[in-house]
Image (cartoon, rainbow, N blue to C red; front, top):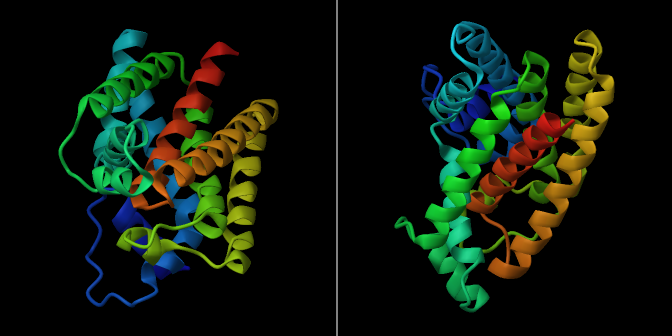
Length: 242
């Protein structure tokens, strides 16, 4: 599990970790087991940043906190979200949309969707509390295990193929993520909040993964990043509304 966590943190974050000298063929797939732990560690850093930014007005703190979030993740999932937005909203064929998703250039849909996502997350983070910052990254990186294990992966996506799980491998990270989330919610007295967040994130993950698989003729690494980003935005928005 330690190697899996190290690989997961190397891939999902920009933390200054010692590089993995020798990569194994199944490192990316095995690292998915540690995604929930990586999410919780990311949440802990965000909670620390929330405290450190306490002297700023709430709207500004929300914007700065989003900047920290993007910095810690290297904007990895945000980049995937923008690429997928360009492809999924295109009127082309599924095969052509997959080609658009792999194009590094940003189009109008990417700019519009990416800008909207940033505005929504920054506004929602203005009212965020440390418990929410712990739960949201953990939940999103736990539930992405479902499309990784049961979704249809597009053959041209190298990253999608390397992280694709066998269905029998899904229970371990799902149970680990559930335990981390319940423990966090219990100690922060937010069990009720966790229930609503989990339902919202589960629905978003399943529906978006299903829709993207239809639009793109299968899921790739960018699509999984888009699922993470969207589920986070939905959870943050729901928490702000409640």
